[in-house]
Image (tube, rainbow, N blue to C red; front, side, top):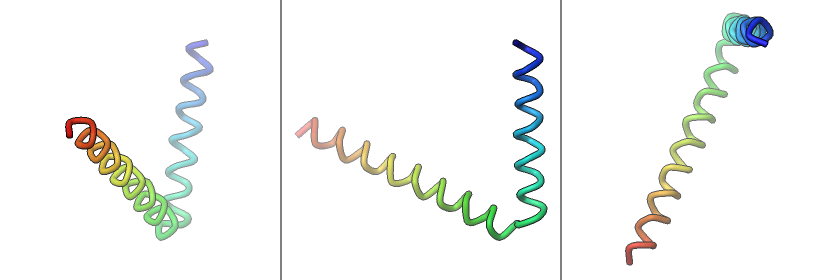
Length: 54
């Protein structure tokens, strides 16, 4: 099981590096979308918690 996890981790790392090298603009767009999603989720969570206090 540990060997399969190690192989899967390396496969993901290689895929990410390949994607960044072959299409850096697209990779940057995907990172931006990810951070935007995280930002919106954090803002919604903060709003929810603020409304619970009121």
